[in-house]
Image 1 (tube, rainbow, N blue to C red):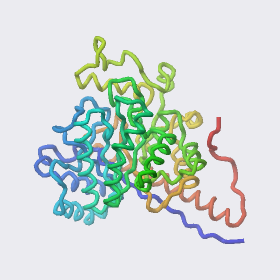
Image 2 (spheres, one colour):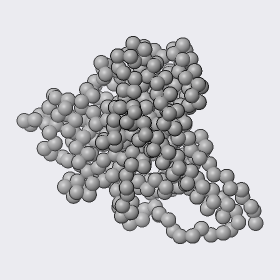
Image 3 (cartoon, rainbow, N blue to C red):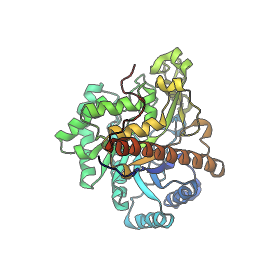
Image 4 (cartoon, rainbow, N blue to C red):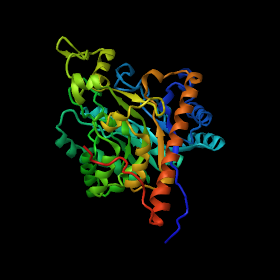
Length: 413
């Protein structure tokens, strides 16, 4: 008999800076771009976040999609209208050191496979600037989407990925970076009827894309930033996804997490199914796609008609919803990650992403206690899962003592 010590491993808790897009007023940050990061570093310390996922985006004056057409307007906390140089990096690093805040990664969430060559070139050039900034800040990863070429089928997009996205991964490799892909299908990204506008939306495509990366010698630089809200949107559950990756030999693919839930509206599912609203959304007027950005935002009814994002800790959950894969079981999510994935848990980031519509406040003082509560909830859930895992999978297992009960099971139907 071996006596295993009780030694739970906790994840690193952080927040995506898009939680408060305008923490620094635009008239201040446009003339002093790094002030936005400094203010967010200070705010992170106030709300109890240990790390930041710093959001980068094309400046509103340079973006191809108007903010009025977006479900969740992005934040250019990292302003890259001018290249990020060593002096800028030193300023940011000094703020991070002062408040003892880390950086999980830099996030730029855009369509890297845009069908317009000029727009794609602009996005790729901006992503390379993000890579350069990450290198200067000593950050080892960036986070973003793959996207989709709307002019091609999904099968043809695999070829486009190999031709156009793999070179980005080669640039990441040259800088010692990992590109973590968030799996949101982005159903409302266009006024078209495609639901899957980010081809890296599910484990089947993650594996197919990783095989292409392996052929090109960049497999170690392509990973997934898993967000359970998107799995719920597609009727999946975390445990089954992690089990599938393990069964297929790809449970090393997940390298980080967004903590954001999804609450499925059963009435919306009854009306439209999991494909969301398909007609009469309001993004098409008189038989053609509207040119009004506010109308274009109605394309998101493909998603929002049947669900609403959850900020962790803000929702009361019906146990039946867990069984129907209509909401996230946060405790089992963290247990499954430890039980089924190949993780260096102590160096894995758990990033709160705030997209709960009624609480998307652009008022620092109103938002502050909300984010404090959600971050505290996320930390305690992870700590509880860590303790359960250490007790059951390590302490009891070493002494041959069985664990009681069954728990949630993968593929259960």
